[in-house]
Image 1 (tube, rainbow, N blue to C red):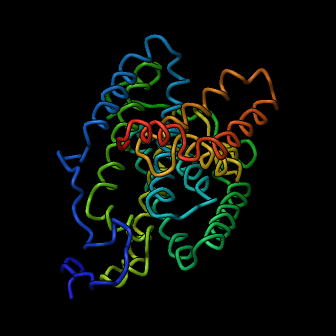
Image 2: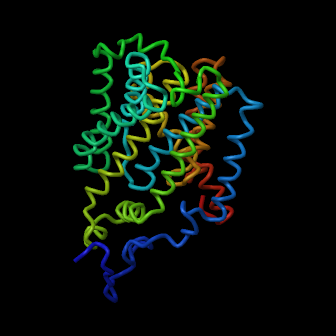
Length: 342
């Protein structure tokens, strides 16, 4: 039987989740090439307007950092929010993407776009290898395997000659986009970063609202039921893992070019915890939630930096408040109040 062949649910078989009471369909909200609902189109218009206007009244480097982490959080959300797999090792792909992009730009002399592609390719390859091992387990076992594998990457980066050890890769050149457009000016670099973020964001949304996305959401809700319909759940989870790791590598590579440095901070386990915080604060399983969560966390880090260690305490307090009072996250609660899907 083909996986696309409709399978009727026997009468009296009991209620099943909405995503599973029929073959995995193309979503009803698919009104365009990227399947945005009206509410999401409105939110997207606000986001695009912010991207266009913000560099004229906010520091471009701060905005670029925000966009890099927003893409990182969106990539992580693709895995945990839509497949239901909690990874504690996403810093490995984020940091390795930065290291490879930095090495490619500084030593190999690649242009920025090729450096980002190189970082994304290595992160995707790493995700394929680690995902193949990790998806054989679920729950806390999956999380611990991803954490252990990420720590292996961290210790590799400490010892590998090309990473610079504790010094990292410094003075990474921004280069010339397509060999013609200089990226030394912050505004020029900002538009490059904004384009990468927007492309990654739209790609994630398209993935989530494609037939493939419907399958992974069905696997999240009821994996045995999805398997009974003929879907190879491990294959779908592995592809989602690779996509998430690749996009995390894009975010890390872009960040390395923006700041001209790739360090051990980006592959440390605390970075994996930070992206979990961003996703939960913004709204797990929502399209715009990780963007808002990243904005909240990065803004706190930037404007409360003079408070030193208290920033971590404040972040912890916000996390506790979200868990207790806003379990759906900021965007999830707003969507619930407005009865729309964001």
